[in-house]
Image 1 (cartoon, rainbow, N blue to C red):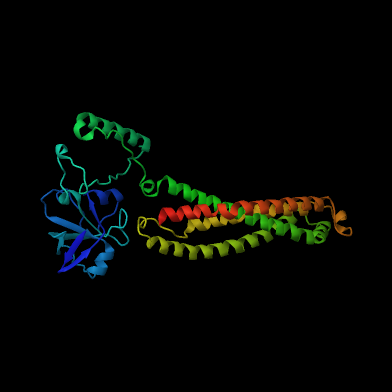
Image 2 (cartoon, rainbow, N blue to C red):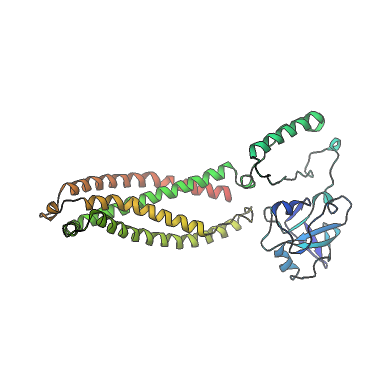
Length: 355
């Protein structure tokens, strides 16, 4: 949208909207008023609502901006409001003006298709207890009725699709890519757990006599398991802290890269490390502790003290540990071989979808 204020022309990303859009999303101007049905009538005085960013940047955050005269697309208009900070709905809009005031409805008999035809996106809010399937069924029935009543213009428009707003911006391919990335992360986590488990088996073998002595002195099997799980948790906690710090850095890089893309995603896509992420990290840390530490701890604690005190400290538990260690080494090599290339595929798909 071209807007001229005090002989200073600017071009902004604008939205042509109906008068109830801001009511639907539950946001009101912080200065001035919202659109009304009268504003949307063809021939009415042209009005516009500014976004907070351009109000501060190009209008000097003038508190008296409401009522000021501007020119929109070469026509006289009036500023009637300013939206809250960071509000750019639906994608990255910087100002808004009534749709039908700018583009009056065309009579059905005069419907035309071409480069100048406007096909607005329709958004709404579901009523309580109404499912998406019900809405889709009603819209399909409505489209068919319109096709029957107006065969000249609606003959080929007999279907309709209602979907969540997020799905309209992501698509099936993008969601599949995100799930694939999550699977790749879990795969890498399992490899890390196998590494730590191998390390724990090695440490348990070196400490076999120490653990046997603890058992002989009265330490219960659960007390020994608890001690080794605590040691595993310390290792996992250090990894979690390092992962969160790297994630903060990585999210910052991701946001910068996405914002620099030719077609950035909607402003309400927020990539942040919030409380939910930290809670999930804690949960994963506990799970990694159990996965990587419980089996070594349990097998080490079940050893017979008399056997472990023998020279070499080799008993049934040690032989079982050796077998499990060999299996883990084979599994580790197999996972790395399969994951070295496969885990890059989701990253490539994500980059191709966003950029």
